Image (tube, rainbow, N blue to C red):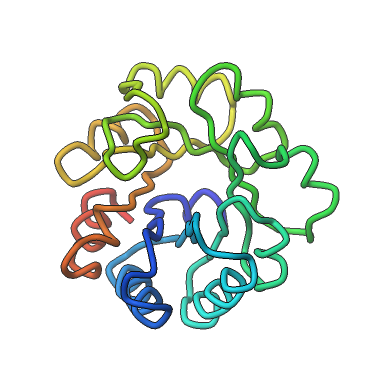
Length: 203
């Protein structure tokens, strides 16, 4: 499954149009060529998060990973989890998750590399300035992305401010793929937006 499913990761934004609307946008993204959907709903309680995750799993033919919550991912039958610096590290999760369960880990600097040990892939960023993740810190740029990717020794996905205007420069650094929020889920037509990125990345 890896690294093909890392080529174009569509990260959800919010429930402004309800569960059905979010799922419809995710389905449209998949039709357009997204290779994975990452469920990221920071302000949603665990019970509702499980419901949304189950809806996505049922509706999509591509892997669904859940941000932060391995328990929610397992309960929903999702393909995996994506953990940040405030979550359990990948090495602690690996012994207790099902066989084949995907673990992605966020890396934003050297001090976070060790926490990614045991993960299947890393999301490194923000590479460019990103309004959607203002808490994530300053943009690191392409050279730093490439350096951190080499340090982790894992398939690396670039995140942060990526769209059709700059994706090719990221892929030229050796990134296995890109992860985007606004470029797909905030688009007027997520299918068209995903297709533009998918075609460009060679998905």
